Each structure stands twice: as structure tokens, then as C-alpha cells.
Image (cartoon, rainbow, N blue to C red; front, top):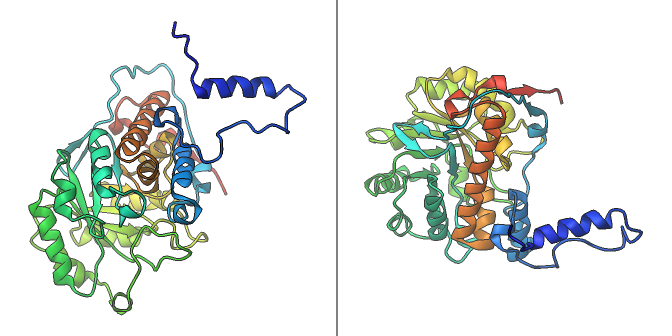
Length: 358
């Protein structure tokens, strides 16, 4: 038996003793202020967030903080026993590409704000975790530098701007470099309070009116699937499918549309019903645990985009943090699927969840 005691085990044992001690309430049990714990000691995504805040400081971390998770608390899973899940497989197919798991690194602009290597480290971490990365057109590093050393599949994300020809040039360049799908983000609002996963809008962008003609100009003739990111209503999704869009991403733009609005996970069931399985549905917004991911899959998503969590890993530990966080969530998802009697992602459906009233 290994006699070594890790820091986490030692703290846990001490905390158990302290709970019955008269000193309880006078002694703080936990990490010393400012300490960055070894990455292999972290046990969930929220601990990565804490380490990222220590590394970045509160002002910069504010850009990565937040998200309303109350909707996830109103969804519970139904465990199912007596099912053989020994051959559990997370493999997911999207647009003819086989993916190790239904978890992608979502687009986040200007990642150099959070780590010196920015997207270069993120793509290494995602590749090591066998995860697809969606690269933002507003990256710190040139696209060719980001994708050159990566053996994994990547997608590309753009924002419609007044100069559509320039946007289309970026898309064509990404496709030439091996991009397997393009995400067009629609309706991105102006960020407020410093909490931003999208670039600041300019006066020219404010005057730019996005319509289907613009979307068609960006996607016509492309030899890769095109997804619309930012849909939050079944009507939008139904129209997108009717007009030949390859996939939809349910998203409220990192929560920037206001806390009073419906969250993506709440909008997902009605959008899935409207789409009717005709195109893949992806979703982002507040996913932090394997159970969150399983709930999204059960309610109709084919895969989950993670935005903030990989950035927490990046900020605190670079590429190794991204890899560790992604593999942790992949492992959590596998465990939770087994708990619910699902051996493959294809077996996950709405029977696994119960939706409770507000």
C-alpha cells in the first residue's frame, strides 16, 4: 500500500478532526492565500476557476467569471442499475468526423489575455485530450501558427462584420488550413461589465444589419459544414434548418444577454423539438460538470462547447491545465453515463432526466 499522504488527503483528515473540535470556526482550513496547487491535486472545474483567479488577479479573472447555473439545479438525473456498461464509449460523430467525446473547446477571443502562449497552449492541451477546438477569428496568434503543430481536428468561428468579403477571406483561409466546420456567431451583444468572451463592438458593427443574405454570402460554395451560433428560439432554429444551415449552436453569448432571459439549457428542449434531428445541435453556457454535460446531451444536444472552463485551465497551468480539465470532464461524463445505464452517447436521451419547476 502507498504510504504517501497527499496534501488533499491531509487537509481532508484534519478537517474531519476539526469538525468536532472546540477550535472550529477559529481556524481556516484550506489553501494558503495565493498558492497555485499542483494541477493533479484539483478535483473539479470550480477548483480550476479558483486557481485561475489567483494567477490572473480579480480584475482580469472577472472576464472569465460568472454564468447562471440555476437551470442545471432544476434538472435531475435518473440513475439506472443492472445495465452492463463495461464497454462504455464516449465516441461521437459530427459531420462525418469521429470525435473521442462530445465535448469541444468553444471559441474564446484573444486568449493571450489569460496566458502568454494563448491559443498555442490551448490547442496543445485540447489535442492531448483528443478534443476538437473551435478557434476564434479574433485570436491572439495567427491561425496558421495555432494549427500548424496540432494533429487534431479544428473548427473556425467568425463574427459577421460590415466587410463581409474580409470575413469570407478568413473563412476560406481556415478551410485551406484544414478547418472541418465553420461557426458563424449571430447577434453577439456589446459586452458589459468587463465580462467578455467576444470582442468589443465598433461603431461600424453597430450599423451593420445581419440578415440571411449576409449569411448566404459567407457560406455559399464552402465545402465544409456551417453552423449558426447564438440561436435561442425554436423559430430561429427551424428557419436555419429550412435555409440549409448544417448545424445550430444554442448560446446566449456567455450570458451577456442578461440574467432575466432563458438560459441555453432551458431553451434546448424546444429547439431540439423544432429541429427534429435534421441537423446536429450543440450548446454552450454554464457547463461545469460531467452531470451538466450529460443533461445537455439528454435534452437534445449532440455535443457541448466549453468556453470558460478551458480558459481557467489555461490561465492557471497553460496547456497542461487545458488537457487536465478536459480529461477530468470526459471522465466525469463517462462515470455519469454509467450511473444512468448508458454505455454510448447514442443511448443518452430525455428519459435520463427530470425537469423540475422553478
